[in-house]
Length: 149
Image (cartoon, rainbow, N blue to C red; front, side):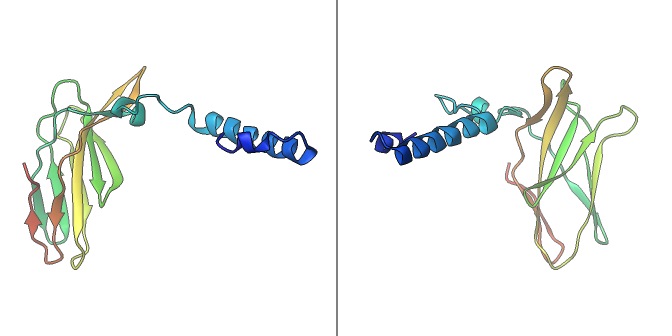
């Protein structure tokens, strides 16, 4: 849209370029939608719920396997999303029989970062992901560094 005033000259080439530029704009709106006038967190992250409870986790490390167990989910939340090295690896939901847990087999010699967030699924709104925890770190030597509170 910024370049359209430059195509003001009434020539055939100018009409072709202005048509191309308008087409790019329409394609961008069709793909990503109009930008929000106020870039709020709700506009930028429609599936996130900021200010929600943060999971408390403490891993159990046996050999090269880490097990995270979440004993009690807050009211209205149905599970936990596990993010390893900033990649969403799993969503574990509470089925009512056992506490949800996440198991990760690690390779010693690499540093691994773990974050967790509560999730809920609503029939009308779909999946909502809560606020992520600070990163817990498994060092290359196999030592666990708890996240800052």
